[in-house]
Structure formats: C-alpha cells, structure tokens
Amino acid sequence: MRENGDEQVPMVQRTLDLFEAFARADGPMRLSDLAEAIGAPVSSCHALVKTLQARGYLYASDKLIFPTRRLLDAAARILAADPLLARIRPVLQRIQHETGETAVCGKRLGGDVLYIDVVEGTYPVRFAAEIGALKPLHSSSLGKACLSLLKTSDYTKLVARLPMTAVTANTITDRARLAADIENGRRRGFFRTMGENVSDVLGLAVALRVDGEGVGIAVAGPIGRMQENEAQRLQVLCEATAALR
Image (tube, rainbow, N blue to C red; front, side, top):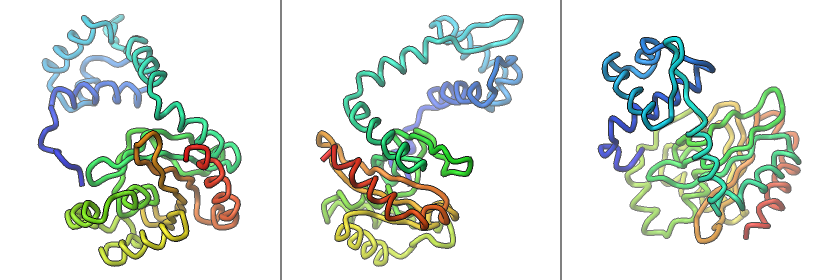
C-alpha cells in the first residue's frame, strides 16, 4: 500500500526508469534498446536523452548512450551531507561484520517500509536487499518495528487501511494477530519474522528514534543459518544499535 500513488509524475518515473535500465544493462545502450527497456516510444526516449545530455548526465559515442559521473557525484555529495545515514551506516557495517548477514535500515513511507540503507551480507547465500525497496509494513520485521513507533490512534487508522495481503504462506493477515505480535515485540524489545515476507528468510529488527526520526534496523538471512545463530545475531543487533539510542 502506497499513499499518494496518484500523484506520481510520469516524466520523473521515466527518467528514473532510464537510469535503472543502465544499471541493469551494465554498459552503454543504443537508443532503440533504451526505449524498449523503459517502455517508451523511440521519439520520446530521444527527447529525454537529449535533455539529459544537455544537462551533462548522459553522453553518446558511436550511437551508444551512457551516463556520465554527474549523477554519481551529485549522489555522493547528498549522501555525505545526510546526518541520519552518517550515524546509521557504521551501525549497519558493524552488524554485517560481526554476523556476516545482511543489515538493513528502514523508515515508514505511507503503508510500506522504505529501505534507506543496506549493507549486504558476505555469505554466498544471503538475504538480498536494495536501497529504495518498499516492503509491506505487516509482513517484515522492519515494518513491524516501524509500526510499533506509532501512537495508538495513528496505528489504528493506518492498519485499518492496510490490505494485509498474504505475501507468503506465513504472512500474518489478521489485524488482531498483527497487533498482538507487535505488542509482543515491544515487550521483548525486538521484532521477529520467519518466512513472512520472504519464505526462506528470518529477520530480527529493533525500533528506535535517531535524531527524532523513527526507524527500524534489522539483520536478516536464511532461516536455517539464522536459527542456528539467533542468539548471537540478536545480541549483535542490540549492542550495535545501542549506540544510536
């Protein structure tokens, strides 16, 4: 569930689709291939490319198109100035270093949890997460952590609008059960999901406020390995996030 979904701007979406297409392609693209990748007419794609070329974000050589470093440099400056991520990133790195599992920080965005930072695990088989991904609040440990930070009245209004879709066979789809699960998480100090958002993944998350911002921080990995090492994973998660409290 995403709030304000009817306010999305098509041209902005198409521009983001263009850069994501290059990320998937891992190399320069021809105009026709780029147009197909973003689902746009060649004429519209050509106009978009010309606009981005004029702003210095793309260059063309031998009919091949590729982004310049301008977007990367702008993103690097933005990230360097973000005080929230500056505090969170070392915590995620510590969790990943001491567990080998993927560490994620999420923030509520409407009816979803938005992954605002990710440090992927080092195991060959691991939980794969992408910065910017949106996941349902009711099915993930991060989402439940974020829900736990809401005032009772705000929680009730929000959850009443959630579709409570069964993401997997283990997803809690009953609102009363979800409320009980979140209350249990508050009492024990962490939130746990096992196969509720990804069928073979166990996630552990804590809820906290960093500089006034409500966030969840989680460690997640394959169920078997996480269960065998759950006490250690939870201890690292709690100790690492204590620095943010």
